[in-house]
Image 1 (cartoon, rainbow, N blue to C red):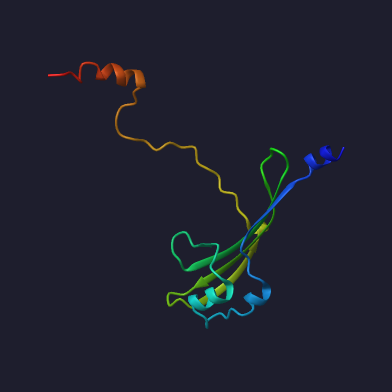
Image 2 (tube, rainbow, N blue to C red; image 1 turned 120 degrees about the horizontal axis):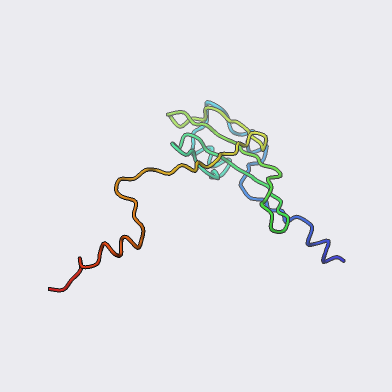
Amino acid sequence: MSLVASACSPRVSIRGNLPREEQLAKVSIGEQKRDEVAEILGTPSTLGTFDDKVWYYISRKTERFAFLEPKIVDQQVIAIYFSDSDVVEAVHRYDKDDLRRIGMVDRKTPTAGKDISVLDQLIGNLGRFGGN
């Protein structure tokens, strides 16, 4: 009976590097530079996609039942924004309610040339490669 009950319980995974509140309290907006923030909070989970002016510290808790897709139970993100002179400009906190799903686009990118099958390619190449 315990085997059946354990098969129905979720598998919980916690991943990420989220600074503690006492560490965050040491970060001063307009005063500290990037290297000082790294000393206090450690290296970020990731950097901004298009530039390195934003550091993200991310923690995510997921649950997975058997073969189903994992479900996000909790997610916390702390974003630290730096100015052009590498001084802390802002600190924002996001949670799983701020999470946005991004849909994939099914369109195909058009390419130049003809659309031919493998068989057409094989037949078209017959006689092209001959010995001298």
